[in-house]
Figure 1 (spheres, helix red, strand yellow):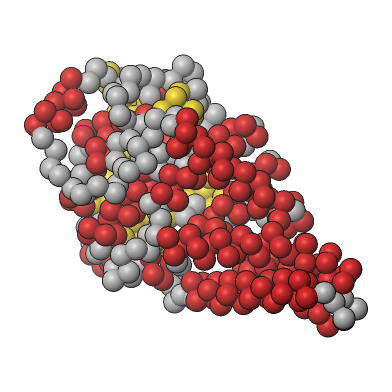
Figure 2 (cartoon, one colour):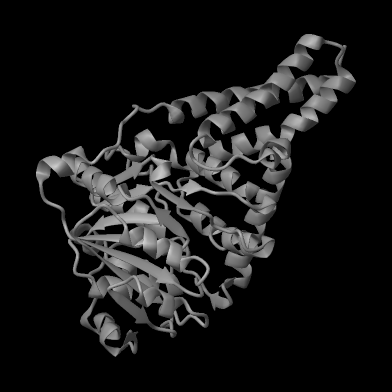
Length: 409
């Protein structure tokens, strides 16, 4: 007979397993779609697209990104690189592939550098559609055609794509876990794409395709100028104010590798926005995510305690199976979304603990220190960006674009 405390703990643990698994099944259920450019072919008109790439010291990535954009199977687009004053050869390399290279090294007070660069480029963009994409992305030839076709067919103002995530370094094994948690936070793709569910939202900053009309309606980057999570803030605004967001779950249209340079780069990149994301996420989404986190952390402990305090092979098998079920759910989510590394599965609970440390560090940095550093620049993020009621920009706020000193190269 095992102790009462162990019996209670086992019941609590199995309840966590049941709640999380049922929720996972609900949010993972979606209609299978074949994403093509058929609608664009029928329409026989390709809207002009301005592709905007913000950069800062991206000489390792920029040529791969821009050459893939130049080879898009799309007839009407321009490429604008908005550089934040790189100290390497990024602007020079970009000139060979782009229509415009804007260089602005200073960032006005209250702005995040990337947001300001995207804002400057959007002001100069000629397109009916605006595509914001990162310098570490690689685009397949048909990606833009499929994205534009679906944006037009779904009649939405913002379409986002989940890029295939390459993982070449051991520290990048935490990235799949981050996206797995984001699935729980968002409530699932089906609800994200349902206009009626205005508190289900998510977007991937590596691929944001806007209609210019929708971009301006929500206030553009000026509306969220201090946000360190521009993609998530935009997703919330578009979903709540325009009811016009679509998440294209087709990972192999665009490829990326986020943090291959170093462990510190990966750590800084993740911690800078984790708490900011929690800040604008509905509480019940956070609650169910915490349930999944508890399941992950308790799983190895329960296996050990069951082996010590129970002589029931049935119970031990159930606990072991529950852990295997957790890994299966993760595997089913991540298949076709990114590389699979054995470290992710072997040390899943350990990585969850690391994620919690990251979150706590982000919390302290955001609420106590109130600054974050990224690529050598220090920012004071606005955690309320994207939560405010919309106000049309005053004439005085618009003057800064005319006063900005940037060079077209």
